[in-house]
Image (cartoon, rainbow, N blue to C red; front, side, top):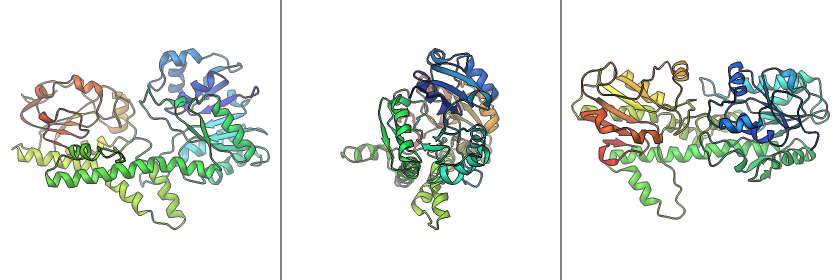
Length: 434
């Protein structure tokens, strides 16, 4: 593989860690259309915090002509001499919860415009089975003028990045690989084996690899939906869901899922790619869509539970001061994409509550741009711009470790409602939890 030169298309949560790993052994060019992101990375800093600054700085180089290392650019001129193109762009859904392949198509157009004979294009973005050949390959052919599996080839190796996880990093997670021909599948597999210490699994086809990825998150989604439904049932029965799960978890084969808000760019999105394809071929995926509906409605359910508890405690709900702790989609991570905490906030505002949001991990400018929310500094008593006394309701939405430093008792008024979505707080100070 001495002639290998890799281009990574998309330098977000998935692409950057992969680029850094490959750059330790190969010449790598990282490409992204976001100019600010390129400037940030070239200064040796990753705002997603997926790659430590010292790790990024250790592989950065200032020339695209190199034996190994990472050159970062937003100009496709510098990737045209690469022979492996790895596409790691987002695959979101639109407002109607249908797959939005726009980033994937745009990336394919960019690669297609510089594609050469013998090149291999590998997709890592989550898609439905068949998308690489049905949606991406025609774009590559159109913009390159080359013929698939004759002049150029493709592979699919789904990303398995877990944002914020410093244990299961890219090289320590087993990688599924595949290729458009048997020979190319082997080349793709060997390429990843060079950097993935956990090893690889070579799938029999790209469709199998695509399907494997999309069901990984669909399976988690369905399991979380099940325990979310249990939480709704047990709340009505006056039973603590976490105590039930703890008791059931003493059985060796009980799956340890917990209730909560299901957001982010994977679990809350990927099942819709599978259901889209299923409906396209004439099958109505009842279980998957039922799980999605359950999870998509949990934010509204939580806010309504909080309002009920406030009424029971004699609070006037309108204009009450409410504190939301956390707005990222998961703990100890700055990623706010598709956070379902916003559903809780919006529903509380429908009840005319005054809502403060505090999250030490989230970037205030990103939160303002994405959700129109001005976050507060660390919460104080009285609430910022609020009445005397503490908050009338406090909702722990994200289990950031830093929230253990907060004195919840000091932030609440004497009769405040404390609701714990994550089962994170001391049960003795909590009025309700999922």
